[in-house]
Length: 419
Image 1 (tube, rainbow, N blue to C red):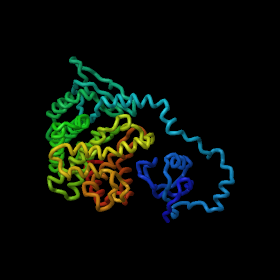
Image 2: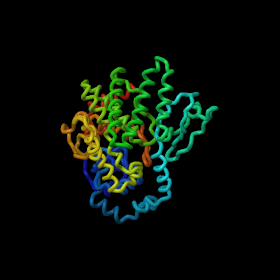
Image 3: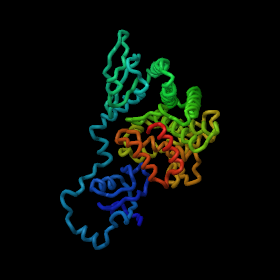
Image 4: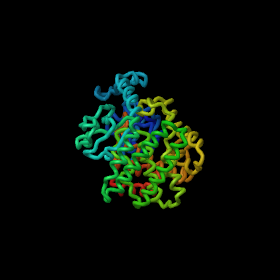
């Protein structure tokens, strides 16, 4: 039987069947699991969750009055006594704050690129950096007579992800165009997709740094049309159109991934109208444009360290984005739907409105899945990404939140790409 109980009544042996709060405000990836350790109890206590749901058919029930009395009278073993919980204020004073501050300053000046876009033995006229965790260091390299970096096999096999200076984005664009010219016919589609995707990331990056630019918005429209054409031409294949192995959250990379996933899924569920596909693709590309108003020290901050004010600030990115996009001419109401509804869900526990069931539009149901999937499979400070399989299992298990028929089509889309 499913039962709602106070969080402080949870004990080892109970089976958790949900939390009475948003998934993003809990410390657990899954919301259905057995409590097997006191460490899990401590996480629940520290999270500030007031109530949880338990399944008494799969685990222990709450203690009876008699058992509760005996529990209070008994002295708990020393090894299970809870350690003092560090306050939010004290947590922010820890030494790693300096490391985090330096990281935010550095990452704001860099642009993430795909290793697969670099070709061994070619030379590049821009600096390369490798990032592992919050460590960013220049990549060891060989230089040619012109002083340019030569791409080696070791560089491409290095752990972590590659970054370049934001100021070198045009040099990177030129390198991509040149590198793609010599590919074979068999590689042409994959290379074309790589070019579309990397250029899309840089365009979104530029737009988010200058959200009032009509020229950058028009360039993004062209990119969405290229994405749609490529997916249609390859019969739903999205290989190289999205970034895999994401070691950190970059709003521009995430935006392109979600747009590609959403367009491909829309096609898979039967949407054929070019106007509808464009609205979903463009709206998905812009769904996080409101993040451009969030200070980088908040945007990159570990979720568990966010204050209530900072959580509210982050959630406000939906309306901030809506205000930004409404300034542009030619943006249809349908294009705004993915932006407004990407954090809504079927149960009505999402935000900003709390739409429920059929009140959520089809494009909103699609992006709620694709956005959550890409978020779960992306690492960031304080959160290690889970595998695509684990993310899909999570989405499948949350039947009350996500449309199961759309999820099936999304899984098919990912299967074609080898995910």
